[in-house]
Image (cartoon, rainbow over the protein chains, first blue to last red):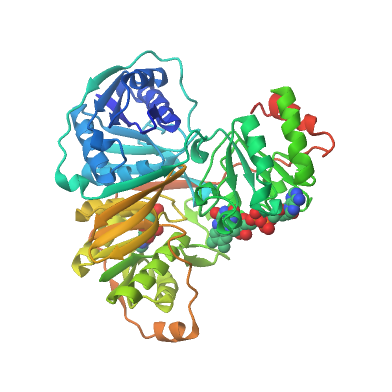
Length: 322
Length: 245
Ligand SMILES: Cc1cc2nc3c(=O)[nH]c(=O)nc-3n(C[C@H](O)[C@H](O)[C@H](O)COP(=O)(O)OP(=O)(O)OC[C@H]3O[C@@H](n4cnc5c(N)ncnc54)[C@H](O)[C@@H]3O)c2cc1C
Ligand SMILES: Nc1ncnc2c1ncn2[C@@H]1O[C@H](COP(=O)(O)O)[C@@H](O)[C@H]1O
């Protein structure tokens, strides 16, 4: 028996969130004695990249290298993963919570008759039943959730476990999957992805700007700060509504939920809907000229001051220190 | 075209979340309930499509009697009729089973949902219903155009979006900027009172998961302020105290 992990990749690289899912599965297998961790990768990707998945704790990677699977075609991915699940005789599937992962997981839960818990924040409690802690109410609470089915799917939130990096090499095996025409009934006609940048939902450090920055022309200093830190950039909802920044950078209740180690908010008031997207951050720094801004109540560190003065100084201080 | 839109009845986004009965029940004291914000996007787009192509728009909710004002609001915004499956929404699987059953019965061409409910944030019901009905499902969808049987969509992915093409019937979990939220007008509110709202019973009791207890996150300590003229101090704190650099 093995635990199966669904790997996602983009631009030839396995996503870091997927490696976290492998680490999670590795720790889970050690806890439950469910054997080893087998990962499944779909579509075109180099085998060196798959061998390296071993570092995170997988002993084997099954590779269904049908090029039609390189794009995340939801139905086809669900079919392929369900075949991988049967072929390794798994009872548990682990994956990272993501745009594609969620869509695939939901279909798989029906295909495999597997209870699905999403937004998992830590290893399940398996002494007795099978109780999984997940984040609910957009990070404002947690629910201890019991899965009653024999097969189980866990969609893991970022930072649920530490990334394991000291594993060995994974063996890579080809996996033959049977896909039908109906699996490809929908077509991805084009993909637009910010290339070379650090992706917001996966970033370890995020620098976000709000309406306090006055206009898109002032984002240079935010980008400079982000570059210095190796961070992704985010924004508040009005900023993307106004078209100052692209929609996929909007953080909050109705946008991206981030869970970085460090979140720096510049000129954002800290409305409850914004906080809902950042409350899983380990450390929050707020820069705002208004000492009464609600964000300070959710922050670990703060500077009361004008962003146009403080941000360049912070960037300079960081350049000196790092 | 026959459109079904799935509506959740959830605490307003500004609600303070609390639990009672030894942390086993949501405490609704003083909480205002709304149409889920993502469901509101789905509803707004559904109204536009119905107005554009003709046909009907049905709203469905799986919930107890207390959710009816929320369903009535969907009628006021523009749904033609509504179905309430009379049961507490036990888990996503249970909800998906109900929706799949009544969706099949109604023979809808397009089923729109929110990308996720803002109470349990599963983001799963659309995919589950899709698999149960053998229909393709897409989420999170930020643009959706219907041209005959062909549907063109934009789906958000990490750091960007992908353009998709598929055929009706299909299911989409919606998010902005698919449409602008619609506010009910006086005529809508008046007519909503007399539009049909059918109450039906759940078709099965089956669940896959159950919540045993709830928890609130630990309280946050107070913020440590650093003087704006001593920014280097912040860098030191982040490095040595918070250890995040
Ligand atoms: C259903 C619903 C969902 C929502 N979802 C989201 C969401 O997902 N994400 C989100 O962000 N919002 C969301 N909102 C909107 C939210 O309520 C707030 O309106 C929004 O977050 C405010 O954005 P802001 O802080 O950038 O702007 P503002 O509220 O205008 O705040 C600007 C801040 O900048 C500060 N400032 C001004 N000038 C300077 C300066 N020179 N230097 C430093 N600081 C300065 C001000 O003191 C102020 O605190 C939602 C609202 C609703 C109703
Ligand atoms: N109880 C419910 N009644 C009707 N629709 C629901 C219900 N729960 C979830 N949905 C729909 O499914 C979407 C995704 O919900 P979830 O999987 O819970 O995040 C929601 O945005 C709704 O459109």
